Amino acid sequence: MQIFLGGNMKQIGQRIREARTRRSWSQAQLAEAASVSQPTVANWENGSHSPRDAALERISTALEVGRLWLLEGHINGANTNTPVDPALDSGYFSTPILHIPVYAWPRAGQLADIETTPPLRHLAASVQAQSPFALDCDDRAVSRAFPAPTTIIFDRAIGHLGDGTFYLFEWQDTILVRRWRGNPERFEPAGDPGRFETLFPHTRPRILGRAVMTIRCLMD
Image (tube, rainbow, N blue to C red; front, side, top):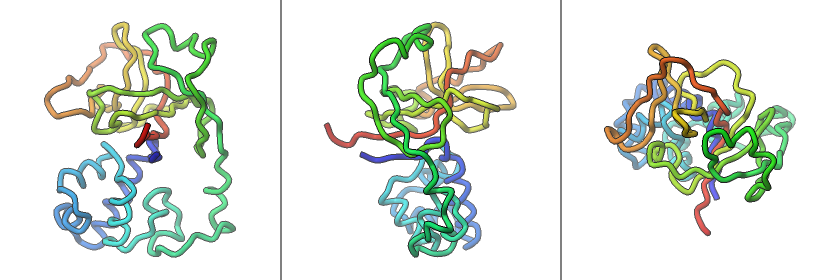
């Protein structure tokens, strides 16, 4: 099982870009050092998806920054790979471990009643969320961000819509997860380029949750 901080994908990309530009590297140079393609680096930096564990380790080594800093932005990990002092990193260790119900993907109109049905299972995750729930996702339109099989943890506490953040919403009798963009307001897919349409709502649809973390099951 791999855990990705879905809500922090954009911030992880920003830190990768910050560390790369601090070394005056191009995306192509980082791609070569991390054994990936330049478009993959671009996707990391624009928040389309986060690097996996092995790639994160290579990025950390190549850019000479701490792995924890890349993930969480902790100051004492900004230029070192040494272990973090828990006393200095109380914010990280104080994040609660929540037992989150996981449901099957609902049809439109069902989400309000989802808690009246038994969940498929529960998962334990350390995440900052006021009202979390999780859904199993297998949607080719967002397969680059959430490769199947992926479980997405959402927070019902949505707040201000953040550019580049993924949201769960109702759209023409369907419940979808897409990346929100502003100016113009739209919901973008994150699948194979050119295969899926960008949605331009005339009125903002009902937002049901904000993606805060993803968990991939790598085995049955």
